[in-house]
Image (cartoon, rainbow, N blue to C red; front, side, top):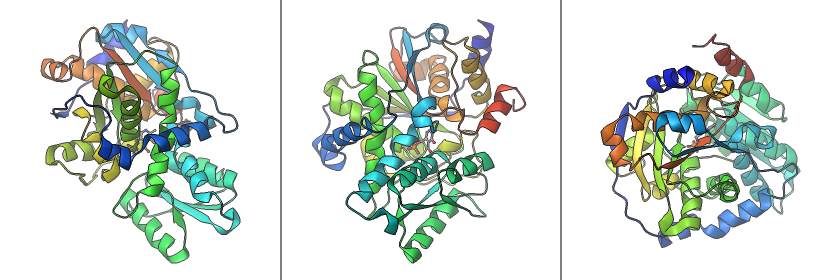
Length: 380
Ligand SMILES: Cc1ncc(COP(=O)(O)O)c(C=O)c1O
């Protein structure tokens, strides 16, 4: 089909690095760091939330055939709790855990965000009955800011980049006694982000009932929290039958491929914002890195250029069912297509015509104005 082929022609890998991983069961050091009991508690809790239902897993058969793999599964997070991304699972769960046994009216939670994580924290705070302050940077769209304000959060826009919003949030929180609900970790701060990650694993519980285990999973990463949560929970379940894990990042924010090269959680300077706003993070999460370094075999980066075309392809229904995919929904598909046309990368990841590949459609139209401009072609 022409629309599939013209999209696939745009899918290229910009940078790649591989690590050799041996097949083991979930290691005991990780069981201490990110325990299976914490994962199952989060999954049991979230499955009892009002309005919970599993998100769809789509079988993108026409796209799988064109790319040359046996199966391409797409976990579609566009409908998650009406918030439009998997992030709904993490921040809100961490707020609930933090609030247990406390008088919520006395607590203010705070976070810095590109949009999706903040929406989850604001939603969780509204349900828990505590106050919420959200820090956003200069480039966060007004649509995303409004969506957070709609849950009653106070929005503070800083005149600078994401890192400045993180610093401002930390300073104000120290001054006013806010509880920070971050989706990334730093020295001495791990408990809350660990709950955020445990919340994300709800997707793994759902996947078990939706498809046979994949041979490969491709996970997009900002700080790496999503990728580490999915990797750990699948590894806890599947042990030595754990699939190969591939990480894809935006070329403008390549902190995990830098970490793979150096062997420790790295920070890179983000000089340009990627269209995949949720992936625009320069600082790898140290907790996430502890998990990823033990299991990820391939790290790749992609450019922004194929994202809008891919979004239009998924919306058209030519690649499978019609899908509302936001900018962060595309990286897994782009990475797979790019790797399959590169002999070295294909071999290094063990990708072949029998591969069953799982990708994560992390978000839907989280900013409807940007989404509509892309689908209409106004943003090419
Ligand atoms: C839609 C979406 N996808 C992926 C990510 C990346 O997640 P992480 O920063 O945990 O790697 C984000 C982060 O905000 C996001 O909003």
